[in-house]
Amino acid sequence: MSAPAAKVSKKELNSNHDGADETSEKEQQEAIEHIDEVQNEIDRLNEQASEEILKVEQKYNKLRQPFFQKRSELIAKIPNFWVTTFVNHPQVSALLGEEDEEALHYLTRVEVTEFEDIKSGYRIDFYFDENPYFENKVLSKEFHLNESGDPSSKSTEIKWKSGKDLTKRSSQTQNKASRKRQHEEPESFFTWFTDHSDAGADELGEVIKDDIWPNPLQYYLLLYVSLRFLIWMMKKGRERKTTTMMKRKKDWRILMKKEMKMREKKMKMMMRERKERRMKEKMTN
Image (cartoon, rainbow, N blue to C red; front, side, top):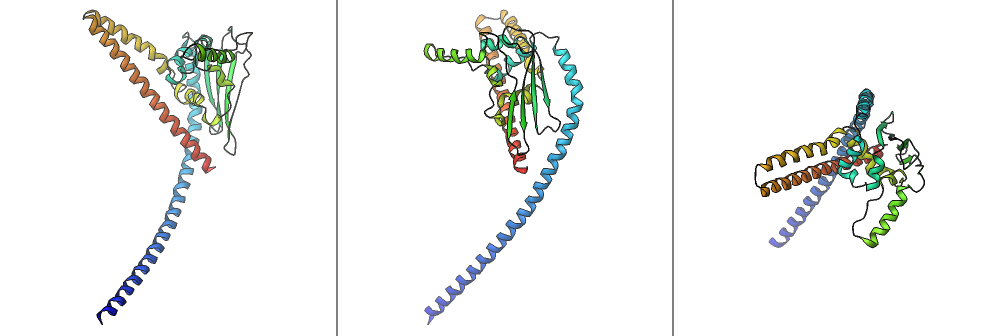
């Protein structure tokens, strides 16, 4: 008689367990619905915050303009300021061939202008003195974000002087390099003005706008500080054995490499955060 009683007890246990499962699923579903409601409120606040941040950015963007103008006037007093700044920047320097550097010696001014609503894009202007490479006095590249969130870009057509087109020369140099040597010259910096393939991921434009333009002096001074440090190390080395001096030079190079790597890491993080922010803005729009 005990066996049937045991079977009835197991059925009741299973029935209670099924009921508990149904209750648990119902509670989970209600929790998910509530989470969704709370998340909608969070998204609404995030959207509101973005609008407020945009207003603040617009306000301070206008306030910065007189200082940017004053800075440009002071930079104009320093020969080769911009080419030195670009050469000292780890990511920009990787795009510069020898002839690019020669052409950039005629670069006198760089200006970054964010459009009034900021989110819609920006323009970078490069001002040049008379030079043997092209006729243009100003080269510009603009980046736009339309209402649907699709990025695009446009730029000045470079009017190259006869035989001086660095973008074609770069292509020819690379072909020769592939046959005659392992080291290849980088693609010309000036090909950037004709590249509109992926405006939403234009790293050079973002590097100039977000890293160099806010404080170009830090990159201009990088070489100056390094040279002063090297001179100091060499003077100290005269009082010691040659081997000690060589070791200090090596330490200096290691320090410089570490510094450059840290700057590059910082830039990559900034670029990644910027892309994530753009994706969020695109989703909210």
